[in-house]
Amino acid sequence: MPDSEFHPEFLSALREARHIAVLTGAGVSAESGVPTFRDALTGLWSKYDPMQLATPEAFARDPDTISRWYDERRLNVLKCKPNPAHLALAQWQQMLTEQGRTFTLITQNVDRLHQAAGSTSVIEIHGSLLEWRCQVTQRVFEYRGGAFPHYPMRSEAGGLLRPNVVWFGEALPEDAARAAEHAAGFCDVFISIGTSALVYPAAGYLHMAKASGAITAEINRDPTPATETVDYSMLGRAGGIMPALVVACAAAQGSR
Ligand code: BJW
Image 1 (tube, rainbow, N blue to C red):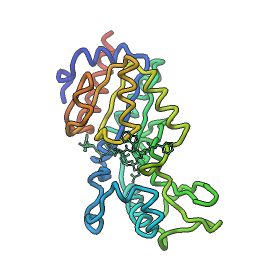
Image 2: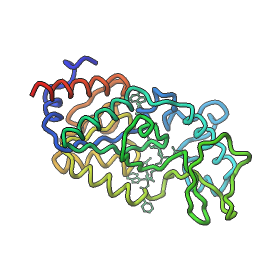
Image 3: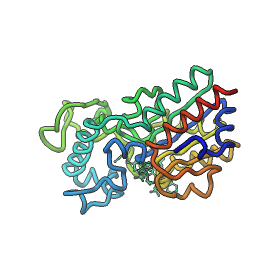
Image 4: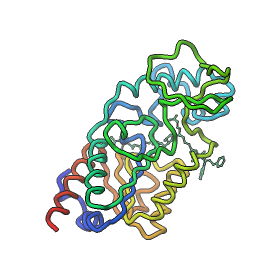
């Protein structure tokens, strides 16, 4: 996407902004080979509905199947590398921080690819696939090894190990939720990237930002329920648009 295709008033808002907040979703990792949440079920898993699997009730009913699903996804994520969208976001954070501005990255993604790209202080509101939590002690283990030897796994305390992600009906981690809400209410520009904007409370952050007076934008392959609400909508691949946006911002800043 050439710079000239970004709305000049959007670039001007980014140039003036002191605080920028970005919310990312599965679309940002799609070009790394991580299936999006709603596309995640292929092959043997195609008979399942992801909305039914990502619940505490499903794990209680069938911990074997749910552990297997998450372990397969964990093994896939470990093979994936950050793509140009992740790298551009990390570069943008560094650039803005050096200019004394704040950049807050809130992610719904559970793959840790933002961190692998070099982003720091990432707010993970839906947890991480690389971590598992003992249901008895609540102790969290990061596990980057090969497939688990059997399913479900138990901790040394005897508790079932569950993925340390946030399932439907569960509360978001308190610190992450507080930090995300603060960033949404405090920013001058809020950008939602690669998310279907269907899952709350994440989808509400954009509305919070707008209500607090921020300029809002969306970058997504397909239209979403937020498309009509945002000030600027850019339809396309995050891996194409994000690097071009960061270049355009650097150029606009340099010409001040
Ligand atoms: C590209 C692209 C490319 C592709 N470039 N783009 C208010 C209203 C209605 C309902 C609720 C509400 N508040 C709460 C609810 C209930 C529920 C909810 O939102 N339900 C809706 C489905 C209706 N929310 C919850 O239950 C939340 N908890 C909660 O509110 O708790 C309250 C509570 C308080 C106190 C005590 C107890 C409870 C929790 C939500 C947790 C969501 N967890 C998941 C699973 C994580 C683990 C896992 O991965 O398995 O998080 S669900 C799933 O959705 C995952 C994702 O992070 C999340 C968002 O999905 P995302 O990222 O948007 O992905 P997709 O696949 O949907 O979309 C990808 C997009 O990318 C598409 O649009 C493509 O076009 C695009 N794309 N390629 C750019 N290259």
